[in-house]
Structure formats: C-alpha cells, structure tokens
Length: 369
Image (cartoon, rainbow, N blue to C red; front, side, top):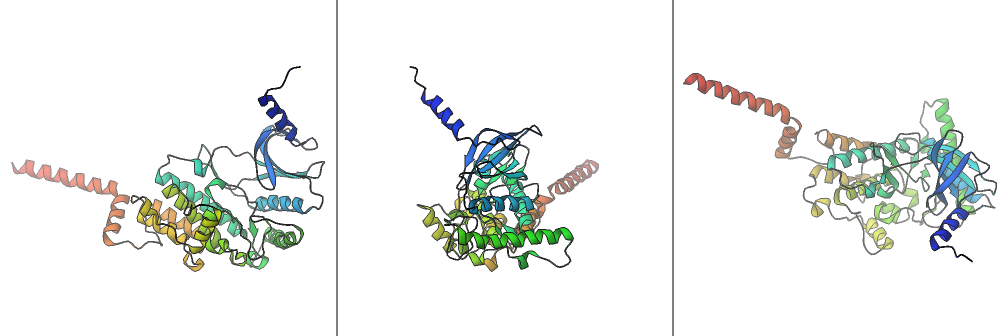
C-alpha cells in the first residue's frame, strides 16, 4: 500500500472543501481567503471567459438570516458603483441553499503591505480612498471598518476599498433629498429596506461583535485600532459619516508613521485608547512629516465628532490642497511657512527670475569694462 504524502492529503482536503458551483456559470479554481460569514474563491466565469472572485456563505442557512446578511452585503456594494469600490457582477443561491456573489477579481497589494512609496504617492492613494468613502456617504452608506487591510492598491494605480460586510445604511430620512429623480427614489427605497433589515437581523441572529446587522447600543463593531471613540464605546446611535472620517484619519496616521494610532497589548486596550482619543502626534514619531499633513490627520481623529471634518469629501479637499501647494483648512501657517510654500509651488518661476537677474548683472559688468 502506498501512503499519501502530507502535501497530497492537504491538496485533497482543499479540493473537498471547495464549494459546488455546478448550478452557476462559475468554476472554482482555489480558495483566496475566508472571513466570519463566508469564504472567497478564485473562479472562472464560463460565459465571459474571465476570472472573478466569488464569495460563498460558509454554511447552509436553514433560517434564512445569514442568507439575508449576505444578500444585504451584495446589495449595498451594488449601490456603490464607483471606480474605487469593488463592483458586484452577480448574486445567486447554490443548490444547498448557500448564497454567493461574484465580484471583480482584485489584483495588487493591501495598503498595509505597500511599502516604499513616497509621501506624495501615498497621499494620492489616500485621496482616492477618501473620494470612494465620500461617494458611499453620498449614497447613505457608512463603511464602519475602514483600515489599511481593507484597501487594495493595484499595479497601475488602482485603489479599491474592500469589505463592506459591516457597512451601515443610514436611516431613510438621512438618505433622501428633495428633487429626487425616479432612480434616486428607487435607491432610497432600497436604502429604507436595508435599514429596516439592520433591525430585523438583530432580532433573528445571535450576532457577535463586528456583525453587519448590529444596530443596538453597547455593541462594538469594527477594528479597535482604527475606530472612532463613539464606536469604541458602543454608541452605535451616534455613528455617522464622521465615524468613517475618524477611521480615514487613522489610516493616514498609519501611512505617515508606519503603525496604527493605537497598538497596545490587545484589541481591548486599543479600543479603550481610541475611546480616550489620545494618539501620539505623528511628528513625535517622524519630525519630517509636514505640519499641514499632521494637522489634517489629527483633525480627522478628533475625539469630539464636531471637531472632525464634516465629511470625507472635505477631508479629501484638504489633501488635494496640500498636494497642489495650497493652504489647508486644518492648519494655520505662519509667514515663513506661507513664503516657503509659495517658493515650493513657484520654484520654476523663481529660478527664471534669478537666472534673468544673473544675466543682467553679467551684461552690466561686461559693459562697464
């Protein structure tokens, strides 16, 4: 009798664990990763001949509650058609009752694994993240778990905000504006339905911290090192766009310093520090960090919600202003800093003037002889 090697056994076990997508148009190739609610697989779309990522529920769901959560996640992402938000291609149910959805296969590296970029390159990436989050906010959706691990950077400058599994749809009255088109009203109807699902799922599921449907007070969801103080305290009724703005500030903190704002002994410690809202200033870690960028970061991470940027769009605007050599709203410059910024922005003109003056001096002294 020939015994199978450990590698062969592991490969057989992986093959046995692959879901049967026989009733769909997808062929599973291998597993990419897994989370609390489902696993993600590399698959081939037979009809279109392209590779996609397929997320499948971990277990069949007899009650339908977990399936509702997966469908909810797919619907939320489907509402957010933006170049920096991973698009959903398809959704369906397997023969065993498990919900799946297919999405764009994202290639590249996670933001926390992207090393070696210059400050300006990192800020351009961060600007795209802010713009994607601002788009979601405009559609009445907050992410609630923004962190470098949930952002992918592609080889051609693509930036994708991932993992909307714990996203929250704001209440219908927050999401509806006057003068809506038919499409706006349809989206508002979907948002209203999803907002109600948040409450329904609480009643039907024994949700752990971090669950998508969690809306009751006292439950902490998200990643402690990047969550806003009100989120760390479980004040879910206070969560809004400014909670995501805080997380964006924490991501910027990571990009500037190479570490999260809070990284003590464990998740509980980090959550308590986030609640206190007292991170070390980035320039204490690296004095070369520009003061204006530090100010943007710390304003976004203000402990008081009212002191933060009112929106991700406003924060993105300050980042763009810094990149363009303009003043930012978060930082008041002194005279020397204004002069230095002006020289940095107009250095080419200054060089031309200096060169012209030198030439005039040369001509003057030549004629004088």
